[in-house]
Length: 505
Ligand code: GLN
Image (cartoon, rainbow, N blue to C red; front, side, top):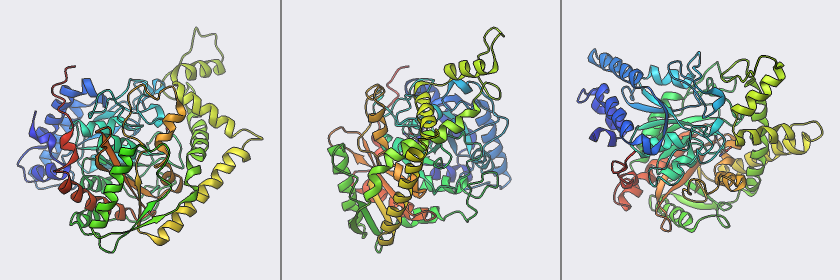
């Protein structure tokens, strides 16, 4: 195993730009690692060996003539299979798009390429990003590198697992209700959901358009910040894109790493504890809050009384938008078509295709959403959920009048076993209890590793939430906490992930 795979993206970039190592060598080291362990982890749905090596060679040529496209030029990355790529299939974890080769790159993909980031391949995910465990992928589950019998979170379990397995130093996720932060928490990695509208959704296969947001996944806060600045920015191709300058998150992460939070006010959300929360998670979280105090932060308790309605409202809004967005998979335009013996009507072809192409969770959401939007029920369900959304935004607004950032556990429990909750949708949905409010309000939120739970020995995530367009605040606090945690816990948590070499395919 090459030592290169253990380096952070920032350190890899530094070595590549100083020509101590070539981008091709770095890409090859990660491709070798994928070949070695991905049979056991299954983080990737597609590995683009040739494309990655060609992109890396191009970066090396540029560096040889003194051109460095970005601070991350030459660093490899794993891309969630929900973002379109012209040179690799985009399946969204679904049979309905099996082998679909998109005609264009997503804006996020294009920005990565322009920055010289080397895309290794596409990562596994719950079908159409619906799920919290990656078990809803039509291509089989991803396994958590901390314990291969456990889930890596979802929907972006492949992205986060690839980081924890040292298959990639950077990854991209998307977060509609927690799909960047929850996988980050349960795999001991960092995941950030930027403010809604600050990273383009052009070429991001839509699940719930008013909630979907792409963002960075990494093993350190600084790496996430570097990636954040590469992918963020106004895009006229996305009607919800905000035309505002990219937030200075790298500077904030560097400032935070000095370990001083004097003058920062941190609010602990009172509602995120109690029944359903694992003791080991609460204990790790409380210890993290104590560390924030020791870093100089002023910590107060705040109440967000409407957060308890967020989960219910989300499971009306997200399925409603999904039922509309997924109508485009009609057997005519994309991917799968079940056409029978040629005697079938267009409606029959559509129906058979959707029956065969969508998995059970996607069908459940389409039915739920179609019902919630139907005449006579629209006001009672969808309309009420939108009102709850406003109340949640107001809770955030009131809290951010008192404090700079809010903190909470990222998830109520550590990673559960594969299969444990698959037959109980409600138990699965409860994973998103702490992450959904920030999607509903559109503010920024991230998860940073917070140690191992004493009761299960598995990673816990500390969630830091910041107001919309103040993403830099969460990076500063997360970076300060990361330094303090590493000092207190004998080095980076990720170094304690089990050696996967021992595992045979
Ligand atoms: N787990 C949530 C859901 O199933 C969130 C998914 C996501 O953020 N994409 O809807």
